[in-house]
Amino acid sequence: MGDMHKKSIVKLDASMGLVAFILNIVWPGLGTIIAGFINKDAMVNNLIVGILQMVLVCILVGWIWSIYTGYLIYNASK
Image (cartoon, rainbow, N blue to C red; front, side):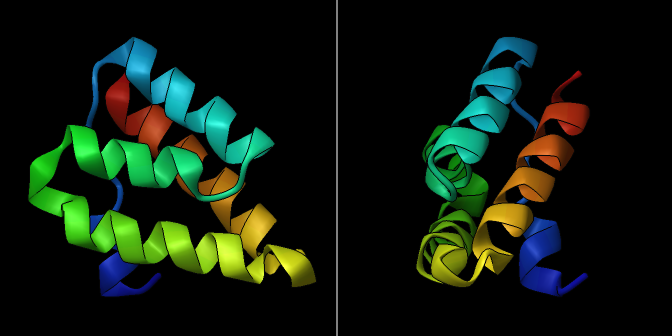
């Protein structure tokens, strides 16, 4: 896993972690971007990763990556 992706796994409160996970399933990358705006320390990394997830959704890689990132954010937030 790349360094930028590791930095995009932020700890939120449990309910926001779940919201970010669900958003990443429904709209790939959106939960990652919102998590970045909530946790300002990783905002740039989350913005870049979220946009890449949105762009790569057309070849299915972005959607899978987005679900995985949402799951990691949710686990970190428990």
